[in-house]
Amino acid sequence: MANRRNIEVAKVAHLQGHKGAIYDFVIDKSTETVYTAGADGLVVAWQANNSNGISILQTNEPLYSIYLKNNVLKVGSRNGAIYAINLLTKSLLKTEKKHKGGIFFINED
Figure: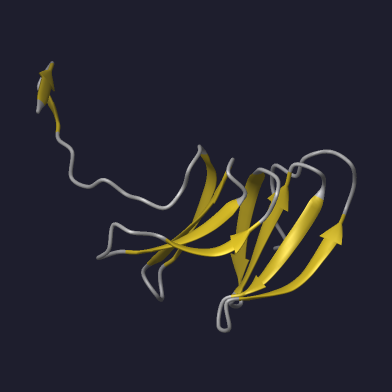
């Protein structure tokens, strides 16, 4: 444990599921699940009481952004594609190419 200026830092968990950096995340409060998108092309689901993530999508490119609405997870990629995942069935609904550059933010509200 480290201590600096009355701030205590302690490791509380070691999460396993990605093989690279995590670029974005979204929290589903109703299911207590955190979904992450990363440099390794993975979308990983994390349950609040488990330190091992479950991969629900794997691509061949980094994933930069993630958005959740109505049990559909949308993930933005480096090459301008948005992947839509049905969270109830854990299946890919569609892949939609938007442009040639990375998608760093998704918001449909």
